[in-house]
Amino acid sequence: MSDLPSPTSRVLPESGPAIAVRRLFKTYGEKHAVNGLDLTVPRGCFYGFLGPNGAGKTTTIRMLMGLIPATSGEIEILGYQMSRQSLDIRRLLGLVPDDTLLFDHLTGGEFIEFAGRLYGLPRGEAHERSLELLALFELDGNARKLIAEYSKGMRKRCAMAAALIHRPQLFLMDEPFEGVDAVGARLMKNILIEQVKRGATIFLTSHVLDVVERLCDRVAIIHEGQLVVEGSMEELRQGRETLEELFVRTVGGAPTTEKLEWLA
Image (cartoon, rainbow, N blue to C red; front, side, top):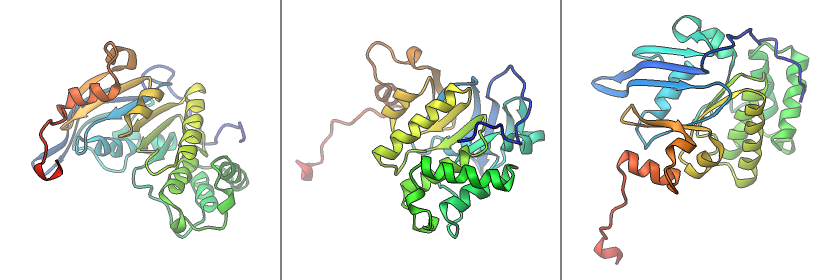
């Protein structure tokens, strides 16, 4: 893949976190989906954002992506304020949403090229990079297949390829490995690790805690829209406690010892 910088590259503030969230709320009626969240994500790290179902993870990441507005609070990404500079922010992001919002009537290559054009790449460069990314993600064998015919794992790989085409500074990824087979997941992990090595920041949600434990430098756990635990993996794993054990202990989901009679 070409090492040329993207024409959408900006001169970024050299200091400060990749993501800074202050008193963030998202309210639906009387329910706080996100309830006063404070979060700081350092640059150049692999950051896991965890929580049980309904904790507010996807709502938070959609606000960071600019897909939905916050009810109140502040979001700063790579030194830019979401409230005033959302377009500048979007040019610097690589997005892999949970629902993989792709254009089903396009082929994978057409969609990836389209993403490159949206980010300001010249037509020829966007086309060249799309072909390289199709090969990298092992989708070139299905070059004529429409995205509507893709499996969920193929859609995830296509979405990640499109997120990479402009060499973003920050990746926001909601369940990026869901539905991806072991070979595809290993490929995606290796690519993300290389991106962190070049200085990018990865912010992801996942229910696969062993993947988070192996990949992430830092982890945050939210529950009922609020941050309950945050720190480096070394800080959070006390003794021999696994991330799964920490998660269950933190959100109060201890396994029951009761049995159903009809299952006995």
